[in-house]
Image: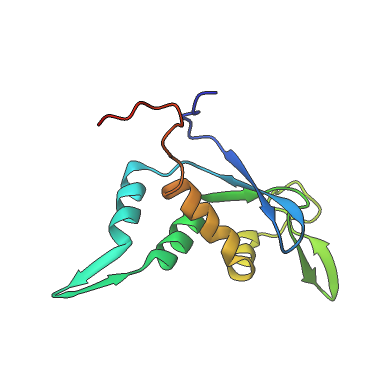
Length: 132
């Protein structure tokens, strides 16, 4: 299957060990500028001191490309009741601040999205020839 080059919404499904369920995340591909900013934000140098900001970069850019969540992927407490959290505006359980809720209460999920899309999308194919 070929990689789809699109500006449309894409979907990743992660298995969540905490809830023993699959979580669907919708995202968009990063722009070239965002990819460069992400790569440049991983490490900073101030004179002779090198600092890493990997966690911050994964969160910031993961949140930036997150465009939606799957139905029944998340629940949250609202007015004393546990209810589904939806990002689709046509849902009865839509919350306008769904993204802020996910970023605040499921940072591991947002960080993993950032990692997979910005860092972990490629690996060497098993049948690739060794160039050496």
